[in-house]
Image 1: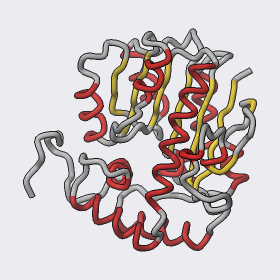
Image 2 (image 1 turned 90 degrees about the vertical axis):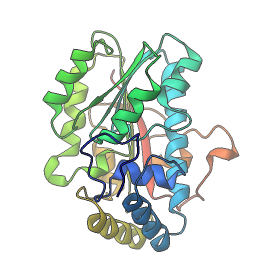
Image 3 (image 1 turned 45 degrees about the horizontal axis):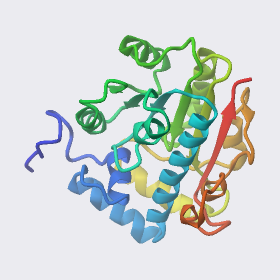
Image 4 (image 1 turned 180 degrees about the vertical axis):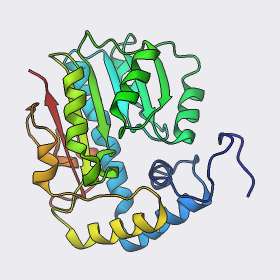
Length: 269
């Protein structure tokens, strides 16, 4: 299989990646055949899966606007994935061009493409880092100089914590990030859930386990809410993706009671 010019040397083109599968669901072009096949299998199992991807992306944009409107001027996007329309730096810098954004992802394709589109943006950067190794991740963040931990930070954990197993202790990962950022910071989390459609969640979880080294863990509402411990939840709390402060009917990609994702935003008081 020929390696596309945009793919870094050494990337495994025979193993599906959650970031590239998500890109395929959004109609992106930075994915491999194995990723498209995995995404197609997911759509055969759950035909409205692309709506979930769109709903999650819409939540990200709304959350960034909310944080920027609340005074946040620097964003740490962990598990940022493949850049596509409406990236964090585009949304935030449209509100204030001085906003600083650091993307972090474990997928080298995501990092390489992020760096390519940020080449002329001196207030945004991308690093390869693993949320499961928070000390190393934070050290790499500090090395970049993009994020100043003496000022409030908007931490974005969008569709990434469900890639961590229970043994990885995702709630503890969020707590470690909370300990580092100062008062006035925010966290935005979206997470796949088994709360509303347990059968579909089970199908997609099994498909992901077969297709990727990294499994996907659909969690209950209570398990997801636990990740916000120590943060003050912003209204309306932990809710279905389309129900978090929709700005118009265009944000309602999924019908009420049908979303496979929950989301919320917390404030460090």
